Image (cartoon, helix red, strand yellow):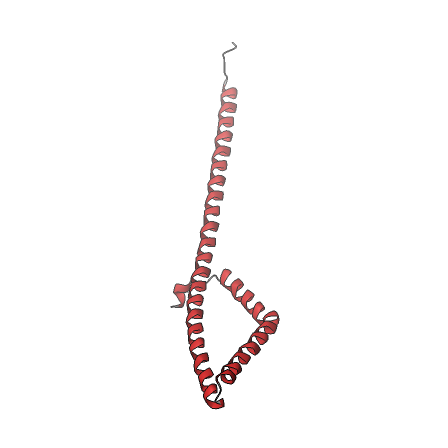
Length: 136
């Protein structure tokens, strides 16, 4: 009677198979969940980086246009001051002095105000949960 399997043995075998299939199914579901969660995080990070890159590109384009306008205005002011002082060197020297003063002011304000403002804006961009299409 070595080959005999009674009802108790059959029930135990079925219970073991059910346990094994339950844990295999649970493992598969956890793996799928973790893969989906990782994909979601990658997509969210990509979306944030795309937003930051597009804003950076727009700000760069605006900055370039403002730089061109500033250079034109600088030449106009330089010629105007040269006309008032009857000396090109003095007129453009005053403009250069204004730029040097502006550079020093920006350098000293950067540590207190501008650096903090830029960091706050980047953090705000990275953690902004609003969809930009809602604002339109």
